[in-house]
Length: 576
Image 1: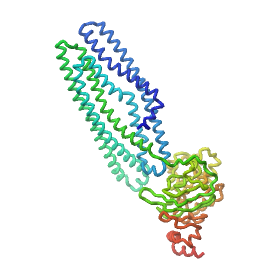
Image 2: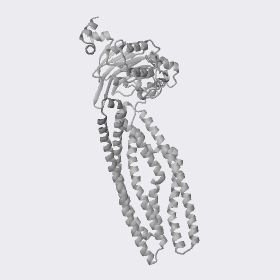
Image 3: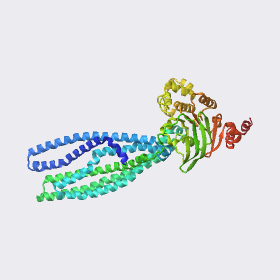
Image 4: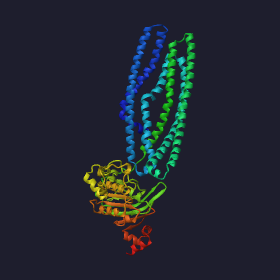
């Protein structure tokens, strides 16, 4: 919690001024009943219009002054709360950007979205209300009691008996509310998750005519959120009628006992009126507590959820040792890796050199993608070492390491911008000549030139106006433009026909690119011409070598070949 509220510190001066202005408002509010008592006793009862006029004008002046301070206070409270939310949201986003992939497994995407938006808004509201009424309300209660006791302590005791009962009840409600609103935020995560899945997969939903099913699925989670919200709000709203009953009984008692004292001549009408006014204002302040308790309960749950993000340890920063360039060797030594409850990689050992074209082959689930994700340290191995020119990756600053690696993932991600800007995304300061060269190497330039606006053509969301193969080649161009030391193609030629894929590989070999190429594939045709093929089977290295060597010596590779080409072709290939 200290971490979250530390974001107020840069705006402490504005917050302090807002708090002082709030105290001025409070002082005026506590003073006005005394002035009203003076008008009643010395003006109305004594029939002295001069008292009514002078005190009345003074009250009007105080009210105008309080109004001005209220406007300034509201402005400063808004400024502090908005700046606080801006900085907090930015810090959360920066923290999330530092997460490794294993950290993202802990926090679903929908939950992170909720924490960056709704949870921040809940705490922002607390900051704003804290500088407006949240602190003022309890101070008004305390100040009202003190002023009532000063006016007539005997009558005021009737109020002091009721208030502790109300406060004890409100704290009970708050304790229950925190747990309930924590569940509300979790249900909101689930609603956001279903919404996100539907928006991402809307075309598939329409194509398979699953709209009704998805509507029913959303209704279930939406109803669940509704029920939790109703249960939480019902508890909070219960506080208001209970406290009103208790306080109204106390005010009726004040009126009765005050009337007795007035008749007996031991107190004045104005004093009783002042105490009743204080009681009424205390009741209004206490009635705000139900609203205050609601936002505090929600904010407490939100603070805990954001603290979880900040408390996440990310051990991927490494030391400040500079990256040794250019890459000469990349070595995997006894690498073991697992996800929770799932062993993925077992004793992986091999060595690669600069300029090689390496194919990593295996069926679905053999750990190919997991293996290459260890290189940019998106995941950390359970044991073993990966060395860059003999230096352990953990000793290299992660940003510098990732800057030297170009990754083309399985799922292509393009942005709603021009084709040129999508390629430049790999290198912010890239020139137009570099963009064109990268596109030519990726075998996408000719297609781009057929478009009316060429490189200025706007792409739809996620490149919806391109085919799968065009998206893949554009993604490859984006990775190539940074001229990385290692180019990782994670099954990113699967949508290309054999002719285009062959031209792409020839283009990569004959281009200016001199780094290491790692091509992850399930098809032998994609890696057939690689300098070396690493075959993975059940998370282990089942074979290493060229296509011809593996085909003649490696049983696993032979089985893959047979499944893809058939037994007759398999026999002809091995005997040729």
